Length: 105
Image (cartoon, rainbow, N blue to C red; front, side, top):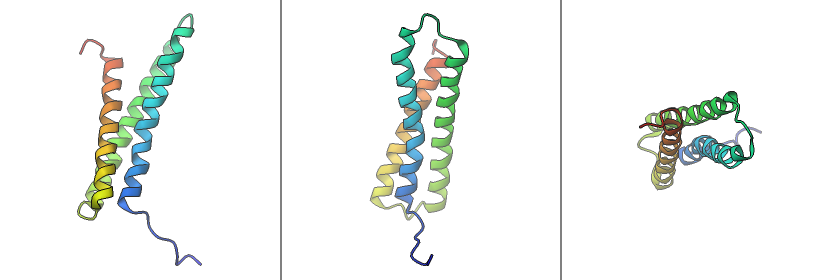
């Protein structure tokens, strides 16, 4: 019954990893489009977005590194494409995190 179950390939794992930073970035963009409608933005809402961006960035980098350490030589070309996308998504999410928390940089 369970003999037909196959373990996910590294490319599929990297695609799943890339979803977290992309989702965090899109949620931040949603926040940026809605906060002008508020008369006053509560501090907890701002810091919630910062925490979500931090979680997306951290998950993206650590999970990507874990997959590369485990499956480094068996990534294949699809895995390398998803690896580049996951790293870029994590970098963009981290850049947005730093620009929100340290705007003078």
